[in-house]
Length: 399
Image (tube, rainbow, N blue to C red; front, side, top):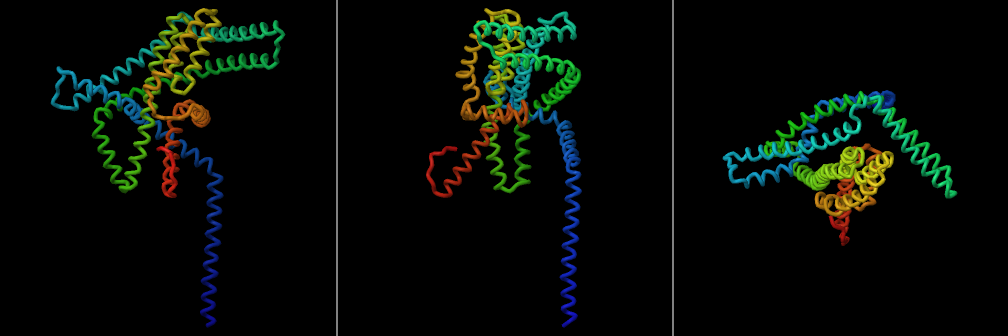
């Protein structure tokens, strides 16, 4: 009896000792991981960065193929209607459509780049880089002088403001320091641009192959999804993808087409009016149209800035009127036609989404903020709707 109690005591003691040792080991491991957590994050970050850099042409190709797919489909429908183009192999129609679409888009991009470069070289032909920086500095100083002139004019009417003086000083300092930083980092940025061009070129080649063999790639993707996931999960994933595609395809493709179209319209309009750097302002404003409300802001600020410092007062007034008309046409006709009801968000929620997206992911975050917000809104509405249905509560909430 005594031996039995002794054995039970030994087992209990041994179990407690093992738990204590295991707990101590876990504490030491967690303490070690905590002290090395920063290094671990750096390693993970470096690995992810390396993978993204290695496969960046593939990601770029997938994005380009996704954006161009509806345009290729539209091209293919029209090409099939051409009577003298009759092929036994249907893949030839697809190939011609893909190549035609890619060439058209590349020509449009080249036109915008030429307009961009031409707008700069026309204004700075024969000027060296040092003189270019000096000229920009003079432009900034002229703008500051214009602000001081406004301040002096207000003072004549006994309107004085220390806040205005501080505002003018802050603007001048910010612009000059920003210009200096731009000059110092120009070489590094040039290397980044060359890397981007090579990645983009490879991405286009990959996109062409993906678009030509679209059906085959989709078939393989469906097979892999069916093998990896159960029927229930596979069905849900397909539903999520359908929601994602409906929102992102409508918004991103629409915004890109709108940005390209507005770049062309604004560049031509401002150049015809005679605003200095009109082509440059138009291209930048058009591209900034990817971010809600930023395109018009860049167009107006750029036009007023370069117009006033070059004393093009009449041209500035004409340009502002033209910009208001163009923005109204874009907001009421072109934009809705291209975007449709892809996001269905109120303006205040769009603005909030852009601010949050900018804080999280910079420019890319601002571009993607609206469709992401629309997707979150859709999932929330669907979740609330399901919960109300489970409780038998009637609601007019539509998904």
